[in-house]
Image (cartoon, rainbow, N blue to C red; front, side, top):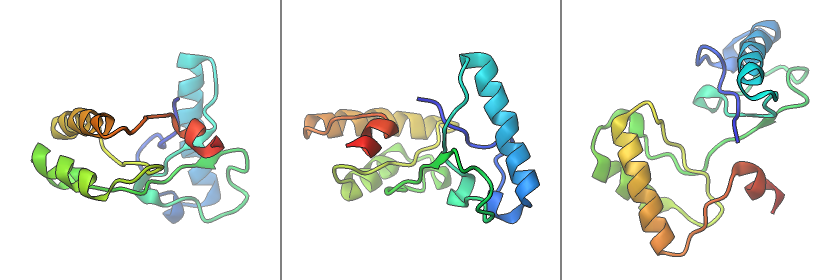
Length: 129
């Protein structure tokens, strides 16, 4: 499942409706060229969605419920523990795969949570259940 995260990682709430739509449209088009489909899901950078209600009536914005602030540290153990202390069934964990430490933590988190009986699903499956 692929979603839109804007083309330039901008705060959509601080832009005009036209600028916000252009950011989203550029990414939508790139995803369509690669996958053949337009994304209908988006995770707005900083969790800040466009303020103008006319933008994106066809898009579902997905937030998160667990934020270990992984971008602030390279300590894999700290990131992992932060998630494991907070996570509950149905949560959405925010991690940034641009950081090697976050990727390593994600692998540990998945192993730990699977061992505890957690099942991982895509966000559309989570929302539909």
